[in-house]
Amino acid sequence: MKITCNHTASKYGIPVILDDYGNPYRYEIGVEKALEAIGWSMRRAAREAGYATEEGVHWVIAMKEPSIPVLNVIGAALERLEQEKARNGA
Image (cartoon, rainbow, N blue to C red; front, side):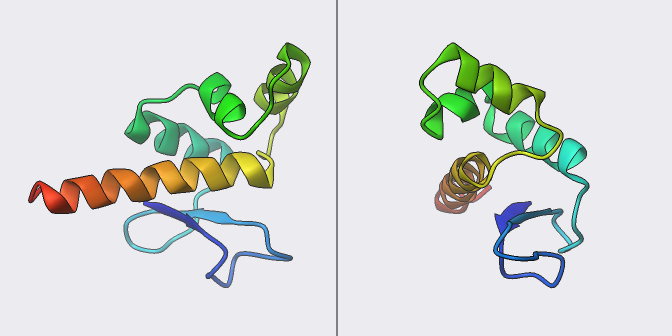
């Protein structure tokens, strides 16, 4: 799984979430699976993306499609997870 703009489903610089075969997920499913993989809540993703106020965090949680900063921090966490797995031979 990864989050990237380098895919035909990505439009106008908005990242897409891809499964392990390169197929795009719908955002609600992809975000849920990505957060599960990295062990984060949407609240943590919002905080990591710089949403410092409770209002900002609630706004991110309520969105049907996550903001680009949220997708980017989730994507970076997924990349770190994959690198760690590769180092450990998993």
